Amino acid sequence: MAQFNDRLIFDTVTLPNGVVLHGKRWDVPFVDMRIIVPLGHAHCVNTILPGAAHLLEHCICHRSAKFPTERGFLDFLTEHGGHHDALTALMMSSYQAAIPSAHWRDAFAGLLCQVFEPVITEEIIGIERKTLGVERGRRARWYPGDNELDQYLATQWLIRKPVELRHLFGDDIDRTNASVESMYKVHRLYLTQGVHIFVGGSFDMGEALRMAGDLPPLASQKPPWHLEPIRWNRTEYHEKRFDDTARFEYFTEAIIGDLSLEEHTYGSILSSALGNFAWGTLYQWLRHERGLVYDIHIEANDEPMLAATWGLHIPLGLRQHVNLVRAELMDRIRATAFNDDMMLRVIRRRLATQAFDLQRIGDVMKTAIESVRRQGVIVTESRFHSALHALEEPSVRRDIFERLWGTAEFGEFLAIPASA
Image (cartoon, rainbow, N blue to C red; front, side):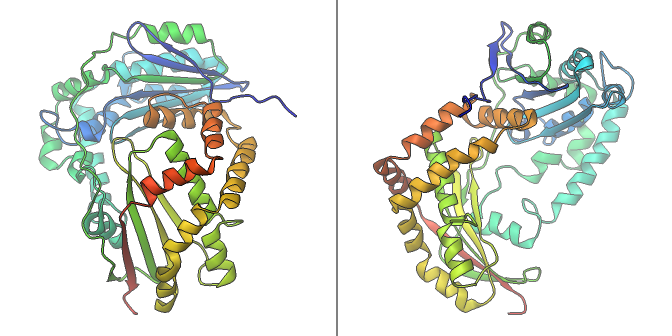
């Protein structure tokens, strides 16, 4: 048997300036580098213009002190076969670059300079004002969803709109009021506690530490933020017709609350025990025994700073099928949760499938970043194994189910085709 190699063990160093650098040396001919800064849509409150975090992310990607010409850094990366990406999320912004190892020093210096020493001009802001306006127009009609049903679920059923559309893109006045001065003011918030830098591949850890260590000291005071909590608007069973719905779409969901690593892991095991196409009890019942569905969807959401939710979305062909599902569903979920033999087999399958996980440095980096975002630290594979092994004890599983799933209030909703 091959010796276990924990692929989520990074060399993590907190530098004197407060920056946390996570290094993962991996035998590949390139370097993947990512910077996470603690500023996102939720921080666009008080004196920060709505949409400013997103606008700043766009503006930063044009010019910097190291690459002062327009799109100079992107040109450098692509000229050597590399690539670049950036995004703004609720509580953070992230910047990524990858390049063959021969050029990693210049690329890392360029990424650091882009994020922390950008050159912002009125011309750049003018271009990105228009871009954000286009993005806003694309999202506006059904925000926070992508269609009428999505919007209803997130605004009239289980309210899941942590920020307004204006916080993402600003409105016309907000974007007009954005200036070079206001952008640099917002940019100063990048240099606050919570900066994490991830470097993976074939690189020199000492050199990476030196370069990251040259950044200015991080301020200890984090910027204010606000997220609207997830909450119920209407839990009782009800129905609504939709023009873009072709089937009877049944939804049931609950607010589970804040989850520990063990509780989060339990949720994934329960979801697999119910919905996996090979062994899931609900899938076997509805797909193979009754032939009522082609697929079922388990909706598990655990966004940092928001309560976790868990539920099911089951597309069905006929109303009588909906009635059958509603009559038996909760009893079948509980029966699966308390089927000790079944749950133990799923846990052991999950342990076995880890042989296929994290085979690429990109997957390792993504998992590590998600771990820091959710848990504040990189959760190693060994720690995850411990959480899985703890769930082998039936009393542990039953306690988690009863505390979180068993006492949760499940709402129900049925989307009906307009032609029905």
